[in-house]
Image (tube, rainbow, N blue to C red; front, side, top):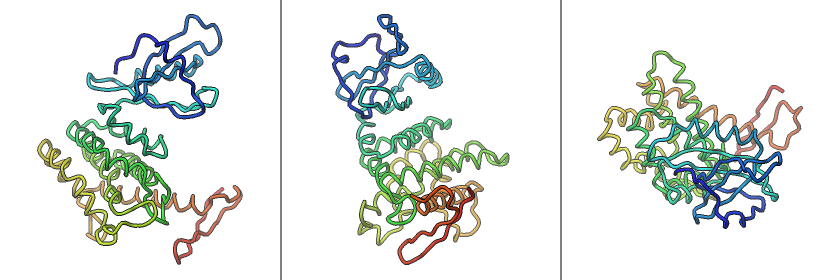
Length: 315
């Protein structure tokens, strides 16, 4: 999406009443007609082609331009802007990112997510992939609106870790980032394997979109493990990956299916995925245990079903 060169008269009439605004990035410019502290203008063009305008100070404007320059745009990329504003249209938070997906493809996913930062990190992870066959695989997965809407909105479990709306994507992002940071630090593991492991960690619970509902497990979820459903749901995208990079596709499938009870993992990165899964789960349980507890509490108990768990923290 090319940056627009002017503001429409229609855009000035749009009022923001304490909300989030999402769409294509519009104009970034200094307003020559305004001499106050907030003398820079930015805009967002939403799915209905309405232009939302905001004044920002020099510091915020500089940060936005710095992020824009770091995007390294390709000819088929669109630039997206998310802005959180107060009732007085003052900017509280913002995110700028790029994607080859159109706003018609992204908007249903955006409307389904509970935490924009998780969605933002998802697109950042995809854009960080240097292996083009693997990046095309993930873009193909993202293009499946029905699956992605569930992936960004469902909990990761019913009563256990990340058992809140949007918990599944939050847990998946944590696992992906921890896995990559661990594996890339090992000199004996290639960057290719690190990237495949990152995507395996990101998608390790993808099958849960068919086993979990917001209130109960689905009937299918009571019969089939979510790992088996993960491969089924990703089958078409995996086939395309196989055609362009067979070794990568086979490695990804192995990492998605491997469990500790199967014995030694053939890839070192498989252990990093399981470790990240355990760490993310443990951190979520501790957060649940200490929720609403005073800061000086260093132990707490958590009831999950009929089991009682005791957790500690070092203040």
